Length: 441
Ligand code: ASP
Ligand code: MG
Image 1: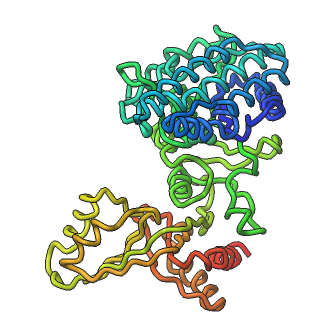
Image 2: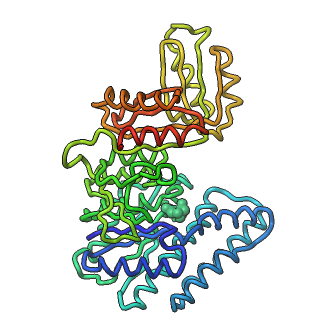
Image 3: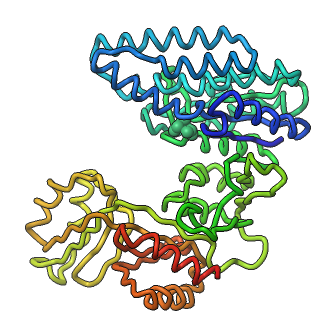
């Protein structure tokens, strides 16, 4: 059994759906379980429709047109989609009357995207002589907590999924399951979502619970690359990364996988393969527990733009115990999440998302520290084997020095697979290219 996950851009229109159907067909004998995202940008469009509804206007014409036209082009008639569109209109009408939108309603609303795409795909496959059956995630036991918009799957999911899909794995059920990514239900029956991009987690959860041979996530590039190909022309595929490296890649900006999606695999050991839907023959990249051969010194370089760098220098608490505790208690108080940190005896530098409102935090810290805030910074992360950190730092920083670039903060994560530097937004592409050249030639 394999799990095959296709994201929104892979199923963006009728042509792409046809193409994905042909890939599924090619894997028919491997007993695929297919996990789909909503078509194209449907999730974003549903969220826009929700905002419109709050301001009193009901309009789903864009979403409706995409789904109806695609169904027409695919030559399928799907009553189930008519029903969903009807339900969606009613929901938006309700929102437009109440003029408010809770997180719970938001999740219910975006769930329509995935629910429509699986119906479309299963109808089309069946029409093509490949019997398929759609499932809303809860039909196979995807139960979560009630933390709407970022729900966590409950442990029972590990047993629920096989209870529903073992018949297919054993060959008793013949229809290929086409399952919604991204969504689940809580114990009370409310629809929840696993957070944006959560379909990856749905796929790794299903694959792990089913002990699949592998979990495939299909993209439009040859797997995981050494850098963002829009930034580095010479970026090339990485054949193998570990779960830990993949999670770091995701946290630090590579558009590979949802950061949380590695969690089920770390438990199950099921490998994840990142494949290119435009190049089926290419093996792509495989994500595994441990490297099969020699651990590469540097795996990839990623970057995240538009972060804010905060330098906090202790004044009153100079050298006294509890300075860091005090600083971080204030971050906790204001609910501000920190990404990268470097510390010295009397100071701490850290980064936060550039959109964070720092007003309250800065007022509180004012009593104990000199605080300097610098906006428009970037985090560049070298995903690497930290056992070689000295050599990596030497060649990387040698190259940066030669290029005349001074980076501002360096930090090595405890996970031992990343080294992070901070630079200005307008220097970041040069930094990434310089490092890429130093490490990959
Ligand atoms: N459709 C959802 C989103 O756009 C989930 C996903 O694609 O993984 O975030
Ligand atoms: Mg998506």
